[in-house]
Structures are given as C-alpha cells and as structure tokens.
Amino acid sequence: MIFGSFPATLPLYEARKIRMLAVSTLKRTSVMPSLPTVDESGVPGYERYGWYGVIAPAGVNKDVIGKLNAGIIKVVGMPDMRDLFVRQGLDPQTNTPEQFAAFIHSELVQTAKLIKASGAQAN
Image (cartoon, one colour):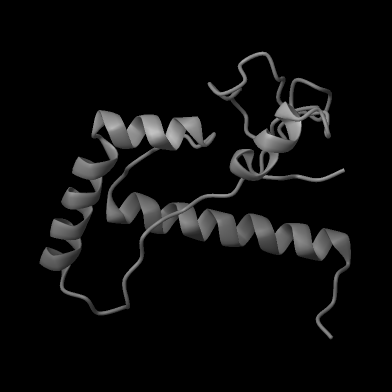
C-alpha cells in the first residue's frame, strides 16, 4: 500500500499495475471523481495530502511579499495553468500570506501529533 501522488500513480493505474482505493483528501478529486475518499471509506475525518507553496525568508518586505502573492494568484488563475495542475491531480488554490502561514502552522501541529502518536523517535 502507498499514499502516492496522482502524477506518480496515474501511469501505473492506467497500465493496470496498481489499484486505487481512495484519495486522502476530504473531497473527491476531479481527476477521478468516482474514487472515494478515505473518510468515505470508513476512517472519519482522515485528511493528509501533499501540497506546494511559495515561501520567502523571514524579514522580506511586506510589499515584496504582496507583489509576489499577487503574481502567483494571477498565474495560478490562468486557465492553461489551472488545467495543467488539474490534469496532474492537483487542486490549485491561492490565499493570502497570512492564511498560508496559518495553514503551515496547522500542518506542523498535525504532523507533530502524528509523530507523537506513532511513537517514532529520531536516531
């Protein structure tokens, strides 16, 4: 069993070398809308997924961050770019720098809980 990304697993699925059971997001994916979520498959509330984002070093001027964010929103909103993301199984989203910072913080908190619950230890 593997939790793989769509770009990595779709060719294997199409070649009938693997069977997809579910997606780990809370919503079904538009790439394979018939594929259920882990939540729908019996693990309520399960949600873990990979994501991509753009970050900058601490101390970068807020005006620069604002211009970078506006440019990213513009590019991600272009129909050709959105289509490219969707074909790769990605759900393109944009937000404010503050919302992204809050998201990263929530991911760190969730991951720390998972590590603690697993009993994993650094060597």
